[in-house]
Amino acid sequence: MSGFARRLLGTTIVTAALAAAIAVYIAVFLTASPPSAGAVQTASGPHLYLGSVASAELSDQHPTWVSFYAVNATSTRWTHATTYVLPAHTLVHVTIYQFDSQTGLRNPLYGHATGMIPGTYTVDGKRVQGIDPTTAAHIFAVPQIGLTVPLEGISANAKNPCSNAPCSLSTAHHTMSFAFRTPGKGLYRWQCFVPCAAGFIQGNGGPMQTIGYMGGFLKIV
Amino acid sequence: MKEVNHFRRFLLWYLATTIPLTLIVVLVLAPGMPPGNGTVQASAVVADNTVFLGVASVIFMAVLVYFVYSLIAFRERNPSVVTEGPAIRGHPQIQLWWIVVTMGIVLFLTAYGTIRLLEGGSGGGQGPNPIAVPSPPAGTKPLQVQVIAQQWQFTYRYPAYGGVETPSIEIPTNTLVEFHVTSLDVIHSFWAYQLNVKADANPGVDNIAYAQTKGPLFFNVRCSELCGLWHGYMFNSGRVVPRAQFASWIALQQRQFGAARRSLPPYTRQYFPTPLRRG
Image 1 (cartoon, rainbow over the protein chains, first blue to last red):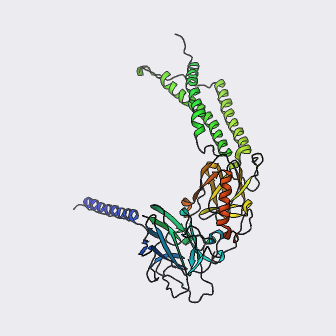
Image 2 (cartoon, helix red, strand yellow):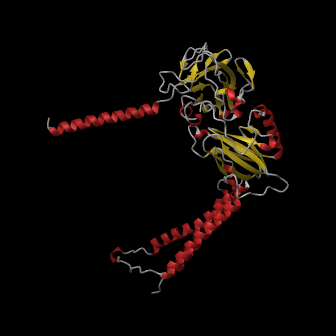
Image 3 (tube, rainbow over the protein chains, first blue to last red):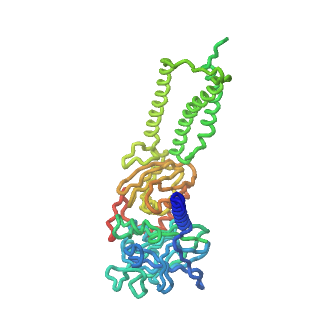
């Protein structure tokens, strides 16, 4: 094989490999979607269980970031997902295990819950309309449908706090339960309104600006 | 052979096409353009757009008709006799007219824009000391509505109704609404499109804009300042409703958010939230 033929073959192989790598990268990019979780079917209808923690799992790429997780009813199985798949036009029950400490709200209005059915929700079994805005750790809010549920934070002096996900129900936490009616099919963003991103300017950077931590979507199908 | 008077012929073509087109633009097309006639401020913008489009039509047609006329009148039909035309050595009369006409147009637009901004620019945020302050309809008082932006939602506070704060907005018909726009975190922008209100929401700043409502109206509100992850979702809608309907709505808000109101800080023109434990 002549020198020219060898160079031509080598160039062709390198070009083909490069083109294949680019094609794979584009295909992965186009087909990738953030992990999602669904509600559990119960006798009373679909039930979504969530957990909110001060810090993600140690294996997470951001183990110091505050985050929501999809969990099971006993908080023993944790999935790092903030896209929740729910059926359309259905009464969905939600339980949130909240393990994080209190931050406080920048706008106290969000201490008042809206959009649930009935117009109240429970904090550790006690039915309330809202919480003291200074004790909020997070909020589960879907502005497009007017749903705002403030989540009570654990006290700074709480015994046995959970530092990183996954968190057991034996560690300090509050349990919030509510129900809401899902809208028609579509993607609805949800977010936290507490500026809870520790270490970032105004508490609104990092996990507050990254889907998969303090915000995500309700995928209504 | 009689010399053709190109200028006269061009002028005839120009007037024959431009007069009807400009009339169509000014009388038919422009009045129906956004943002519509939902408020006095929106109507003022439509009027300004009509004037600008009218002026633009006249200029655009001058260029277009001259271009077409040149293609037809100065085209050499026998390529074998194509020769260079005489060198252009300047034409003081044309140059003078060119300077006078273009300067006149620019000066007119400058003066018109300035005057209209001063007398009718009340829909834009004018800071805490507005220059363009419209008068309310006879027998009415301006209604203050505070717009509070935060990542990523607008909320609205009504100081005349006990300072109630709500996540939705309604305002009454035939009322001068005085928007006080501020932010609790980063820079946002309150853009109520059909009201022709657009005002930056800066933390610690009271930015005032006005809308004089007319009849019932549905309007969209969007944030028009890139403000973070959910900027694209920072929108909602509002309604201009008859006064009686507004009274019922605000009473409902006072009941619904009465408990929350007790947690709110006293109404002020701007807020400086206490540093949070994490931030």
